[in-house]
Image (cartoon, rainbow, N blue to C red; front, side, top):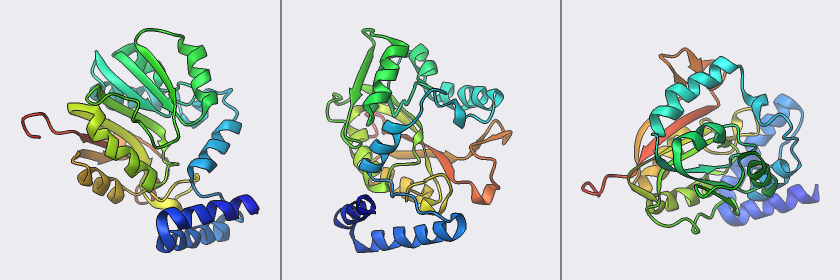
Length: 254
């Protein structure tokens, strides 16, 4: 209980009473539905959760089936991560998507809040001149040179990150992306009311965050391949997540 209280106090200081009150209201709804209250998606809570997580299944426990994953790679990852790109992956976990990115990137930077995940990726992908590994604090990317990234990829990660921390990331995306660079981010669409320990992030908030940081939103969707596959098997009007694809303006436009 003391840990939860400390976390709520930190949320109050960082985001204010309105945000904290809205979060508590959403969690009361969660308690009524599920009989339990989950911790808010603070950096501390994420670090504790994923440091203790059993990664023996390499994150494939979140893959509905092989056809779903291959379709996502073919219709979402490959069209937006061209061969020869300089790629940043945020939250690689045990390398579930890194396996595909490492084949396409001329340089690949892996950043994770959890040291255990970076260790897993080092063991899986080894040391190479075109691979770089970093443990960060869940918000900071200042160690990445400006204009050195062509593509950003993150899946199954930002769904658990609070909107304030996502905004902190986005402020840096505009600097580290090359002109015309693109980001592909999977995040919560419906806020903390969605199942699966989702954060307060929403589709609209992501659009606003990108706009506030001079990033042009190209598309937001929860299905691909003409609707054959969806992020979630929940009804369309209850889909908990969305994929946002945004772009830094080309040099001429900037």
